[in-house]
Length: 568
Image 1 (cartoon, rainbow, N blue to C red):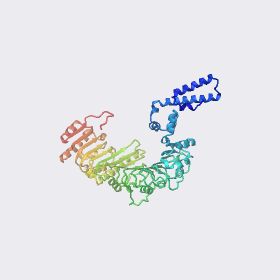
Image 2: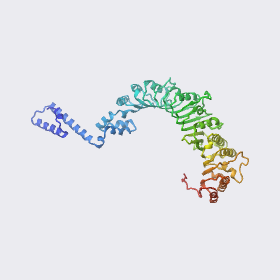
Image 3: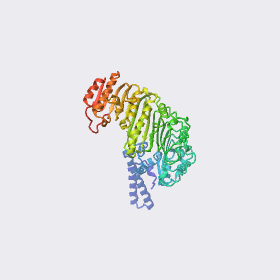
Image 4: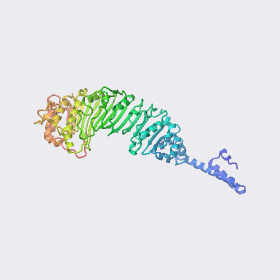
């Protein structure tokens, strides 16, 4: 029997099976079928049967998709095990998926990943760009040398739970050119997983990543930024926790930024006992392309004026937080950095017209006091300055916060707003959460008077959840502070909005009457409110008087909103 003849005769699969069956029957009757011929014929029949199954499988609708569409299915699988499992569905899927390199180019590898599997996966990627996650997870990854021939294909590299010596080992292993590497993410807190080496690495690390764009570094104690240099970097996410150790080396951060002039986005979170003070006061690193700059400093003592040494003339969004993490510490002489450098920062990041300022004071569920000032510019740029005081531990601390620190913080914050050179252009002012200012009301009243006295005409003034006494004291029948240096004197305002004032401090008639007197005062001065919105319960008699003094509309509640219903 010529076993190679059938494919060349152009027979269909049913015809091929029929021909094989006919020949088997004929040969059996003629008693001429040898054992070898029978075995060969059996193989032919099995081959034909497999071909039939294969053709039938191709008729399944999903297998009629183009291969470049079919390979998109496992691309959505989160884990490598799922991508491996899908190759066992059928031979067609396995052939398509195994031959598609980019499906295997996303590798999540740990110390427990088998060497055979790593070799298999690296063999499948061919010349495809590699995205690699190495999770040391308390154990060394002994097969990193397998990555050495593929350095030019590595596109992103994430290193988790590694010690400094492991980071250095990997850097030395892939020391060749890294032309595609655009993302490097290093979590160098591996010492938490065991007593491995904590020696500082030698210089430099990943020096051939000259095209790196995004660098994330999360470190405790080591390694420092001086071990890295990426001249074309655009995004930096830097987090460090340096407690019970040397002072945070501010110069290293400035040197790194100076060596990365193409940066466009910075997010830095720095926790330290103290900061080095070896920076010349006139040193300023200019980052001309920065669009976003977020800096959070948490300190157990006085913070460093890092922001005064960094200039970002094109920044669109900036946020600077200073967190004081010790209950016993006094409020700084002026919150964030001292007041003059802070105002210089505010001028730098709000070059356009400042249209809105929001001053907010809150106490969170962990009894942390929060103060923030947000400047919103006409060109879309925003600047937010935050001060957070943590670890309020007992009633004595609470009393100190309410009686001393909160009024001081409010004073520093209002001074920062008042001294801003573009304040005259502000159209909207919002003060939120001043209900915390129950102590030293005389100081707060003076600060409110100075702040409002420095404001130009406003489109809107919003007092949200505030203690209204510092604002309305001058309009009470019996002012609490008749000798105040500067009681509140309101500028021309188109719209006054009062939201949920602290009503436990007065009854509705008292503060309602004060609001009427304020409105009457503006009307008498020839700058009446165009709108008054009172997002709180107001007696009808008060509202009736207000309507006669306001040129446009008065909105108020004549009864409390049901629980759970808030007014937008």
